[in-house]
Image (cartoon, rainbow, N blue to C red; front, side, top):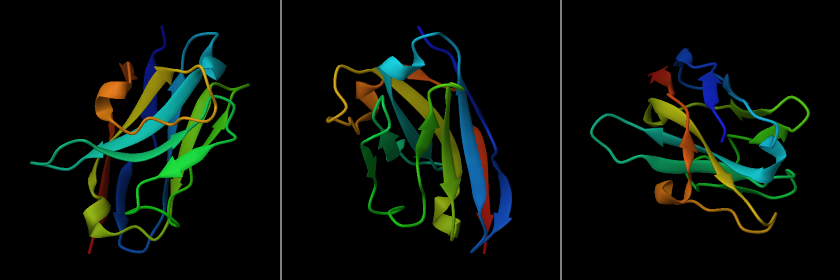
Length: 127
């Protein structure tokens, strides 16, 4: 089992940057595919980015490609999401998620694929 705690959210102006971080408990962090999702008020939780258990494969939603970068440090049990060129439509609660993985070459993007979730961190981008 793994427990996830997000940090790094906040209020930023459009065009600015934030760096989200997710700290995971447990000794088997390197066995998990990690993902970031977000949920805006009145909307469904949506996929943002994912990274494979070793970090060699990443995948992004089209809406954040080129602006967000997902990375992980298996020695520190962390996964980060630096976010640049933020837009008001990026405003949401951002969630870290984990899924026990058997491969580095398949990255799930559905909410239902992930087994563990953090509590979320609010990101607000003002125009």
